[in-house]
Every structure is written in C-alpha cells, then in structure tokens.
Amino acid sequence: MEEEIGMILKDKVAVVTGGASGMGKEISKIFASRGSSVVVADINLAGAQITVDEIVGKGGNAVAIKTDVSVIAETDAMIDLAVEKYGKLDILVNNAGVMDDFGPVGELTEAAWNRIWKINTSSVVFGSKKAVNIFLKQGSKGSIVNIASVGGLFGARAGVAYTASKHAVIGITKNTAYVYGDKGIRCNAIAPGGVKTNIGQSMQSINQFGMERSGKGMSVMIRMGEAVEIAHVALFLASDVSSFVNGAVITVDGGWTAY
Image 1: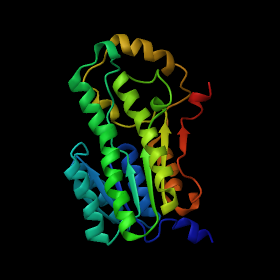
Image 2: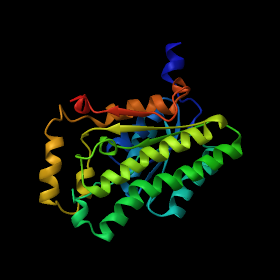
Image 3: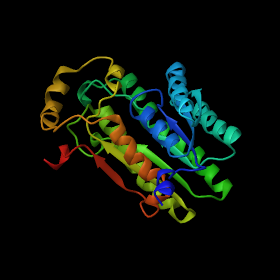
Image 4: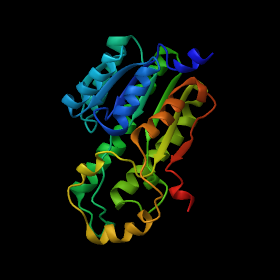
C-alpha cells in the first residue's frame, strides 16, 4: 500500500509551465519522483533543461521545451510534445506567471496590463483549452492545476494588473471544473501566499504608492513558504487521490489570510 501511494502518479504524463525554477521546478521534480513523465516548459530553456537533468539523474522521465506561455502556438506545442513523446496527456499545471510593479489602476499603462494578462491569465485559458480537447479526444480523465495566488482572493497583495489576473484564474478554474466535471476532467487552483521564488525578478519597477498601500496586507504575513510546500499540494490535486476535489481553490499561505 505504501508503495502504491508513493508512486501516486505512476504512468501519468504531465506538462508543467514555468518549470525552470521555483514552484514549477519543485512540482516537476516531485511529479517525476511519484512516477509521472514530465514535460518541463519554460521560456528559460537552459533552466528547464537543468530541471530535466536533475529528474533524469534520479531515474525519472522528463523533457524540456522552450515555451513563451503568452504565445498560443507555443503552449500548443508543449502539450503536443507530451502526446508525441509519451503518447498521451493526463495533467497540466499552469504555473508560469509574473508579478506586476504594485501599480494602482490610476497609474496603469496598457503595456503593463497586456503583459501581465497574457502571461498570467491568457496562458491559463489557452493551455487549458488545448489540454481539455486532448482529454476529450482521449476519452480519459484529466487534471488541470492552476497556480493562482492569495492576490486572487484579496485586494491588497499586489497591483491592479496582478490582482485582476489572479482573480480571473480562479474564475477560469471554477468554470472549467463545472462545465467539464461530468467528463471526468477536474480543474483546481492553488492560492499560495508569499513563497521563496524568483518571481520578484519579473518586477520591472516598483510603484511606491501602490507598494505602500499593499504593504498593509503584506505586513501580516506569518512567514514565507518554500516552493516544495506548494508542490506537495499540486501533487495531491493532480493525482486520483483528490478525485472528488473539483473547482476548489486551496489557500497555501501558512495562515497568512487567517488574520
């Protein structure tokens, strides 16, 4: 029994976006360690390959692909690679994302809005579209795990663009879950709190006014999380152990939002 639980994703095939670092890297590694073949997708191909090398070095199966998730053709290609190399698709983790500059709506630029929306939200829609249609074609069950944020539940965790993008991810999750639930397709979201990743590097500048206001919400954070702590929740949602969990948003923030 313990061995069966340990290989909870045995013979599954997963695609993980943003797999070169942070939560995506840890999700890719833990999926592989539990029996899944993994397509590690990231705009940073060298970083994705390092993740793959670590997986293969421990006896797992994985392949890297350079993917800009803001480009639909590239999200299609990463999923096509999974089917071509491993014969099917079982799991999609929409993890890739970027942070905004804490800018409020009164100072938002069109360029900043479009950048955040394409990467954080449109990629989830079109990646899920591709995955859902493959699940339906296969006539098999499928699991989509979207990485949202506590910023998608509250208003004082980021700027307006990031906040809106993650609220939208939660809406996409719930709609997808309900519409396709009777087809054996599940869609759930994780709403992490502050996690030690390199997402801060995606911040092009800091809006001091927005940061000051959002800081009121940030000040009650209990502690920063580790990427692997999010990966364990993703493992649960991706696996059949969570077969009756659909349309859920699991907050993983160490108690931050319990305040």
